Image 1 (cartoon, helix red, strand yellow):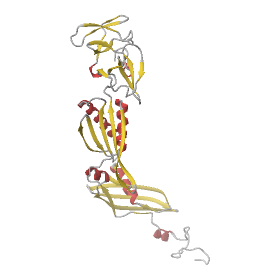
Image 2: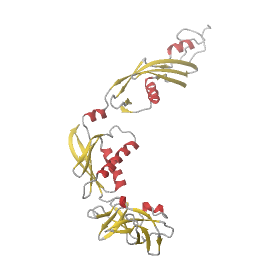
Image 3: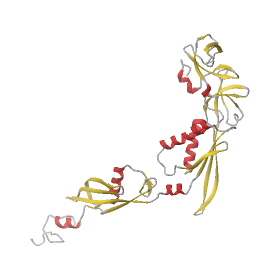
Image 4: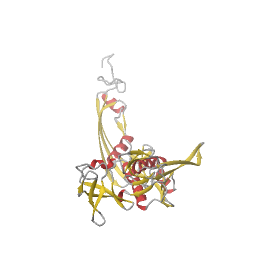
Length: 358
């Protein structure tokens, strides 16, 4: 070695040298592309089978979970680039998997290649949600009622089914659970895991069935100087449904659509729409429910009347035409009002069926 010529500061070898004045052999001895533990531990709730991921219990596809665990445990040299990584996961049993990682990359101009193997072991740990369920925890009480009458069993079933549909179509939330439910005088009560769940369902019920919700809060404890409250959300379903015929202010109307403050009503005797508040209609009378209506063929017509077959005895009846019957219509919707068959105008939801009475 010529005097003054650069050399490896570790072993004295001549160039080529790295930026740290190390030969390739010494550079490789001092630098490792990656490190990986021989054992990795994860936690799974034995009740709901959710995994603890980044500090919270949740669900993840198996392959995605294996990738996540490997990346959590893998340490890569801070100066490494052009990385190429392959992962293979082998399921040994319900609690153990073998993870094999092959990784390639460059540190400065030198290519490195590592292979690691680790056992991923699963231990039990009950999540907070299951702990709360076991302890009968709930944040909200949902009360299903009707205005001025008792909810019918079919109505309760329909309202309750809408909660199942909401849960099935919502992003998974560990606090969306039902602690307890059952019949009460006049309706149905449910204890729900979160206030957000109750409010979301309340909005869904109002949008689908009309009516109103009312919230009250009760303080049930204190934690770190903050009040812990429990929500009671009352949903009051109208005594009438969309499409029903009601008697309001001595006239007959069909319930057309819902609005925030009350329904839009469609007059039976002439083309007229009007809004009413939920309070306005608290004492209205339901004359005919949509489920009791018939759509029948028009046998004959003139400008003011139609002939139809009575759905009960199949006799020919002549009825005054509904004001919105068109010349192309072949069917009409009818209902019994005070013992007489009556033609009904279409609601907005039925107007797409022109020609067949919908």
